[in-house]
Length: 104
Image 1 (tube, rainbow, N blue to C red):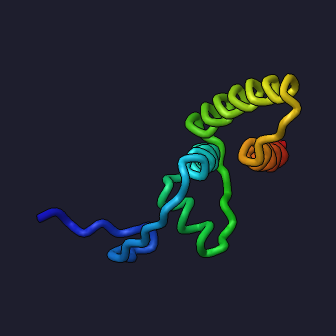
Image 2 (image 1 turned 180 degrees about the horizontal axis):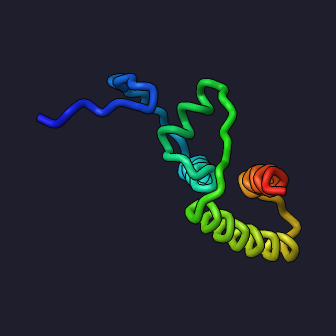
Image 3 (image 1 turned 90 degrees about the vertical axis):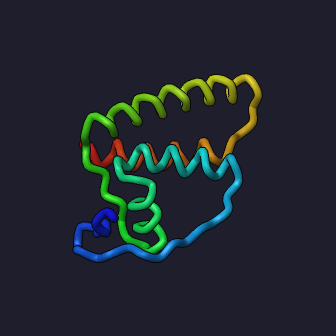
């Protein structure tokens, strides 16, 4: 039997919480998690407990920022032609703006 996994404070995480989300919500959550540089579990715990998510720069975060900016540029080019607004894209854009503001 393997050793029990503990978090950074030495706590054993033995409780499981499950939620159901739509594919669109999952895509938005995945984008926010990638931009944070955290694991999905760490990100969800911090958000559920209303803790701040502090983004620290590393190559993985840089790559996620680059990929997300490319996706948003494509989305906004499409929107310019269609004149419609995607709420999920706007939410991710606001999150990106906060990250870029913090990088100054």
